[in-house]
Length: 321
Image 1 (cartoon, rainbow, N blue to C red):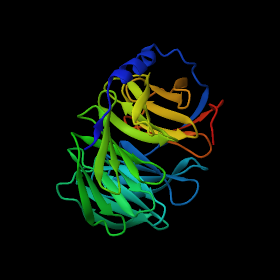
Image 2 (image 1 turned 30 degrees about the vertical axis):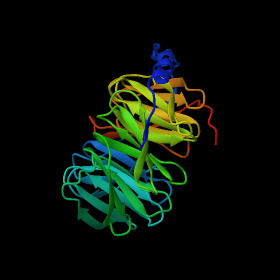
Image 3 (image 1 turned 135 degrees about the vertical axis):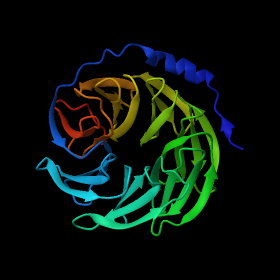
Image 4 (image 1 turned 180 degrees about the vertical axis):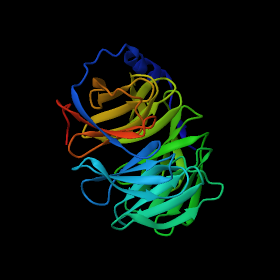
């Protein structure tokens, strides 16, 4: 039996985060790259210096050479490529296709399709690889988590959760999974060894993306326009930070969380330890998926214009390595 975390403390903590954002505008340099229709998700390439982007509207995955800042390869895949998951151990990229409920494995040089597998009625809202276990965990977007063996993509187990699981993240050792439940306005905490839910933590409205920064789970609340910071030791929300409209995709480098605010032409930088906004970036477009790169720059998708923006802040927020 999992425990329900009381929302009383959450309301008190969240009140401080509802003030108008008066953070400074961060000066940046922006370089745009034309890609195929509706860039949707990012993953680091199999070779250093490459970035892969799934293009939902064109059935392709584009490989971007970051040094030359251009598309170096276009690979035709299946309908509706969405999220990309890098599998370091198998030197491959898993592509989740929401258009056809298909998993495609990419690999090789140049990158090519190694295999594909239909998942039947299992929809593919989001997923992640469990560290050091060879397991791919999939959110079906309806009510369940599915666990597949990453090597052959065979179904291993299923965990029933609440309404509309969207995305998940594992702690460093892979002993816990944190799952956003859009229909519950909560995050479910799962013991990965026992395959059971051990806690449910109320967050904001319509939680979507989730990343872990140290002992903090960071959640984008699309419907309440804020970010929940959840203490993974105490299993409670320690702060809620008001940002711009419709925060969606998240990425982190060091102690800095980057938030793509889909309906406000803004990317927001948050100091996770201090639970405060560092600054914002004016993108000039509605930002989609976001990826913090190793050199301190950001890749941000512009789905409406079929472009990827490489954004280099001139003054980086302080980062804890």
